[in-house]
Image (cartoon, rainbow, N blue to C red; front, side, top):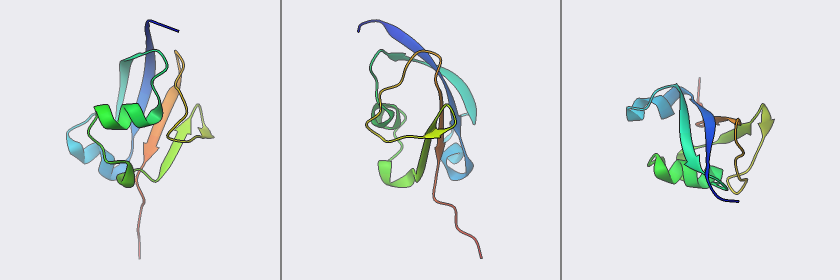
Length: 79
């Protein structure tokens, strides 16, 4: 598949501190994976603990589709 897709991106907690908006629509090349998004945003994979696409757990290797909602969460500690 060629062309571009639009994805709604949500970043939570410490991932927002990188100067990125907590919620934004991004345009990607078709067949971009979650890993590709993290690399494009310069977020090290080790900083992302949970990945959800359209409310379901996903992997870094999963390709995104037009209209997907991608949510990235860091590990959250507490005490």
